[in-house]
Image 1 (cartoon, one colour):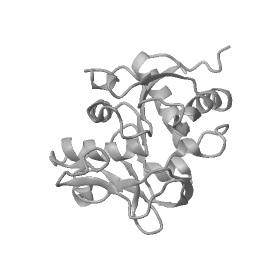
Image 2: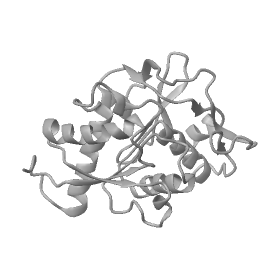
Image 3: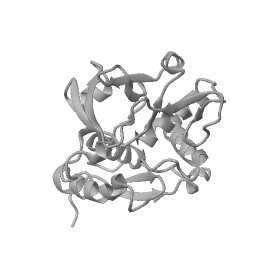
Length: 244
C-alpha cells in the first residue's frame, strides 16, 4: 500500500553494512517510520564503500547518506560518493564517520590540502585532519549548541540539542581553511569543539559527528533524518517532474 502521492525518492546508503553496527540496524526502522508517520517514502539501496569507487555509483540518487562504520573498506569510495553529492547538488547527510570523511573530502578537493589524512586509516601521516579525540565519545551523550540562522538550527527548530555519539575521532587542524573555503561549522559542544558542518548554497548538505539515527528507539525519526528525507523527495520531484 502506498503511503503518499509523492514519488519514492531513491537514497544511497553508503557504508559497509554490518549487523554489529547499531546505526545500520536502525535504518529499516527509520525508513518505516518516515513512511508511516511522515509519508516520506524512501527507496533505499546499500552501496558498499568498495562499490562506491565506481564512477557514477551514486549519480541518479535523490539523497546520499554516509553512515558510521569506519574504517571503511574503501576510503576512496566514500570520498567519491561525498564528492559526487557535493558537486552535483544531491542532498547529503554524513553521520559520525560520514562527518569525518565529509571534512576530509572538502579539505582535499576544495581547500587543496591534498595530503591531509584520517588517523584511523593512516595513523603515521604527517598532516592529520581527523585525529583521536582527547576524550573518547564512545557511548557519550552531550549538548550541542547550534548557530543561529544555520541549516542545522532550522532543521532542529532549537538553539540547543542533546545528542548521542559513538566515536573516537574528530577534526583537529585546518578548520580555519575549511571555513575560509565556504564550509560552515554550525554546531559545537560545550567546550567549543566542532560537531556539525554544512555547506551554504547546497540544496541540503549536513554532517554531524553525533549519530542522529540513534535517537530514541527508532520509531520517531530525528529531525535531521526527516529533513534529509524531505530534501530527497523534493529532489525526486524536481528531477523527475512528478507531482507531489
